[in-house]
Length: 235
Image 1 (cartoon, one colour):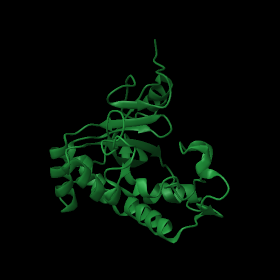
Image 2 (cartoon, rainbow, N blue to C red):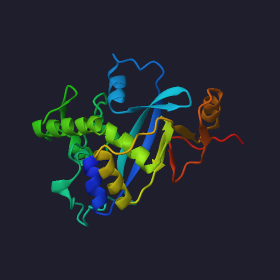
Image 3 (cartoon, one colour):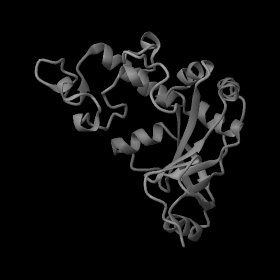
């Protein structure tokens, strides 16, 4: 579950794990700002450099738990319903404005989408006013939190990113340490790192970046790297 900074502080305050998932896009020409996808990427990321190559870094705070959500009750109800994160409140709507809501991508039972059920979306917009307001607040937080998350990376000393589309570099941090770092970042303390490195489980990507003199290293998918593809090392 993707969390805002405020939600991550609450989640970690209850002793639950929150990880940082980090990906980066090469951004040599400031992006095509007339493209809504590129516009969204720009406002939800921060500037960085990998070697001499400009990148945009997307850092997500995500709730981590093994198995079912820790708030799931035996009768399958939510034990945190009144205080659940916005990402839960807007489900099954898409959090990103350029993504269409596709039932096949969701785990709702088929009857949730049948005739006679409430309309969730009209012409790409949330049909329910309350859901629309929550969705807007969720998206606004994704933009407003960018500078805090940039400082957070610096305070935690984490400067790795995966190439966007290949997976995520993962920073694991104890709940109490995350809370301390978030509080400091929200007070404006710490400087976000400008110099980043790329981690990848694909030798072709590492070699391409090496040709550009970008710091990159080959890793296996696992604890510190969530790969979108099977490991493809150099042999």
